[in-house]
Image 1 (cartoon, rainbow, N blue to C red):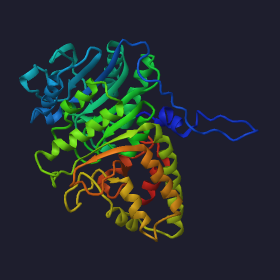
Image 2 (image 1 turned 180 degrees about the vertical axis):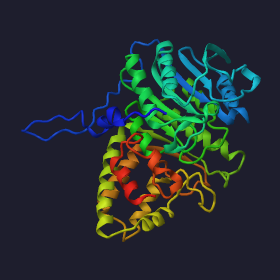
Image 3 (image 1 turned 45 degrees about the vertical axis):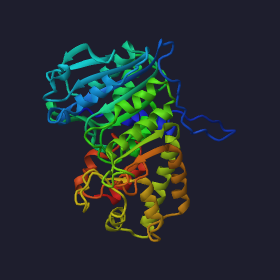
Image 4 (image 1 turned 120 degrees about the horizontal axis):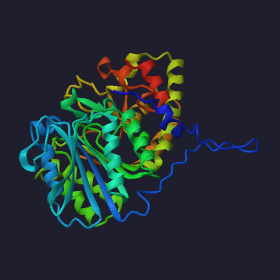
Amino acid sequence: MKKLLLCGLALFALTGCTLLEGTDDGPIDDTPKINRTGGVKNADDDYTILVYMSGNDLESESGLGTLDLKEMVTTRNQPKGVNIVIQTGGASKWAKTYGISSNSLSRYYVEGNSLKLDETLPDASMGESSTLQSFIEYGINNYPAKKMSLIFWNHGGAMNGVCYDERHQDDALMNDECVEAFENAFKNTNFKGTFEWVGYDACLMAVQDLVVTNSLYFDYMIASEESEAGTGWDYNTWLDDLYMNKPTREVCRAICDGFIKDNDGDAIGGNPENNQTLSYFDLDFAVDYYVAFEDFAEAWMEHLTSIKATKTQIASLFKTVQTYAVDSSNSQLYYGVFDVYDFFIKLYQNTTLCPDVSYILDCLDAFDMLVEYCGWGIGSGNSYGMTLFYAISANTQQTTYYDEYETPFSNWIQFNRTYGY
């Protein structure tokens, strides 16, 4: 997969490197200025939802992509000016319901409770930046709206990517490839401002690195800390709210609540086996969190150096923190994602490893503003909405995936190289 330095795109904007203003007479204003002006100016339509659906084995083995398409199609009362646009690909076989080909990329739109084919393209990897870029450009050019949103539908692997394509050696979109697609698509279409929200109907994508990076392109983000159930989001529930023109925050919450309730089934008071989570983030506060966390990471490394802490001590601390995509004995830990809030609580309680608590309090204050809502099943443990990456074992492949190509958290990269495995 092609690598693109985040430093050349999003990282400078996040750190203020290209946005500093000041004179000898006063302090430098190092607060990033993100231009949030909504969707396409002078658009006739109100809303466009772009669904990037890489079916993979979820579709070829179980038809789960088709089930969600049915939910989109059967949700009634779609108003004029609200577009649901889908690109399909990435699966070796599709259910016969809509005649979707596995040998090509197909683009559809929902109208009159039916799925209508718009165009067919030659087969290409859904895990390629150029494929995503093309779809975003197609959506902006052909379905411009006052509010634009994007959904990734597929498997997710936190810092290991999203939208795996089983027809192309499980190629997936890494964070840097998404950045490349967003940057190029916005530039090529002369799109100004941000999309309304980005959603991940995929596992494990509520990781802080993606939250911060996405703040350059979206106003809100919806994602899960835990592995999502294969049936994914309940599209009937939240599309009803969107069709009624409810505010974005209400739509985001409906997505979260509908997903959790769907996994409770008919259990009275909640299903104790429901470990699902789904959060939404107000990305206006992402940069504040980023700055607080990077300050914390630097201070914590200085403290750990002063007390001669070991990797074993750090790993032991993280083993007490809520983690995801593992078995009941925490024997896998492949993805290396841990709940941020629970981490800070456990660190605060460790008098040896804890640095100056002011850094923790600053992070928690910023966290509370950034994570606007967290839906959770009663079996989800200490889950508060967002995860961080820590290379707790060699299986997390820290040197391959957690580097300057994939995240703007440079101090946390250094922490992982020093105290990770």
